[in-house]
Length: 183
Image (cartoon, rainbow, N blue to C red):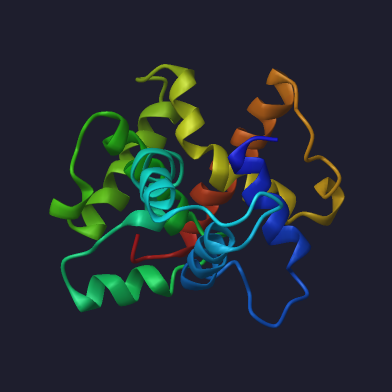
C-alpha cells in the first residue's frame, strides 16, 4: 500500500475518534507518534528516525516537515484541515518544490499554496503534462475516501479510476474556490 493510501486509510479509520486526524496538527502528531512507537522489531534509532524524516518524509509528505518563519504562519498551518483545498494546494506545491530542490524553510506559506494553485490551473488548462497531477495524489485520495461510497476502494486503482479521482478532486477544489472570496 502506498504512503498516500496508508494516510487516507488512517484518516478514514479514525473519523469517529474525538481527535480528528483531518486537522493538520493532529495528523502530524499521529504520524510522528507512529514513527516513534515500538514495532515488532523494536524502536527506530535516533539516526534512523532522522534519516526517515529528512530523506523520506520530507519528499513524500513535505507538509509534515515544514518549518515556518512566523508564528502566524505556523498557526495557520496547524489549523488547516486535510480535506480542504487549501491544504491540498499546500501539499502539491510543497511536493513540487521539494522535488525541484527548493528550500521550503525559506518560503512563505502562502507562496507554497500559490504554487499548488498555479499547478492545478496549469493542469486544468492543459499547459503542463497530465503526469503532474500526481502532486495532488494524497489530497485527491483523502477527498475520495471521505465519501462513504468509496471507503472500500483503498486497493490499487486503474489509471481511469485515478483520473476520475483527480477530476472529482479538481472539481471540488474549483467549486470551493468559487464559493470562497478569499482564494
